[in-house]
Length: 365
Image (cartoon, rainbow, N blue to C red; front, side, top):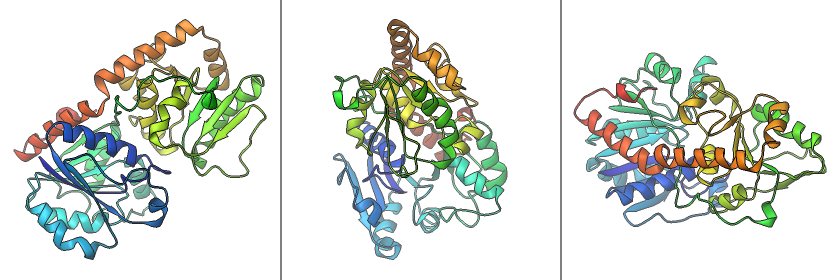
């Protein structure tokens, strides 16, 4: 396929989860023989934090200053596209959607990588600028990073005719077991951008255990943490890391924590990309609990589902052998079910079904 994408960013992983996902998916798409053009608006907050500037051969990253500047070129690309796709939080999403829907692309698609955020805005009787005025009814295929009831809501509330889950994924060539780094050494770690709606859960599952184990080293990594964050003496911090450094971060932890954004946790079936990254690195995983977690990892066998600081403290007292067994099981599950290669195969099937007019109901979960 020749694929044209209008998205948020692939060049900067600062403060967003889209970039890392697109990088690994693009690498896998190219490996499978597809070509791709990714249009990214050149905005200052990503331009100053870029950690890549080019894509693998077969894919092209094109920066632009305004929609008008690429109107003709994008139209030419769309005219020969097998798949044309715009994503949530694309700065020119509504315009790109109009271009896509007016094009001769074989499959015209929308990928909501932030489905709970989109749906909660509707609850507040507002909407996001990346959505077309008429909702999603005219797309041949609507993909959602979130499964479960979010899929039916996209059908009933946004008129998506053909909707399917395309969950997160990982690149196992990037995220794999590596040597421990003394700089990132910790008994327990957390990697994530600061978010106020995660703070209560982070306090319960990370900060309270840190206070209960003052002799152990706890490590947080991420962007946008405020000066008022409640640090303790054994709680260490490192700024946002480029994705290439994530394996060293995870592999230097005895265990790591996943905390899901509130909207995603409320809808369920919305695994963070960090879950798959840590699992692919062979690091024991603790996660907050949300509906559908067992769809991706078996609790207590591949992942430790934790609801309280006591659960975390009990988990940290497990033997190295028990934690290692759990981590190895999660890594095996991830390599089997949650890689970019697996998602590319699913995307190929979904596009073929949409192209010939079959509904993608088999992908509903």
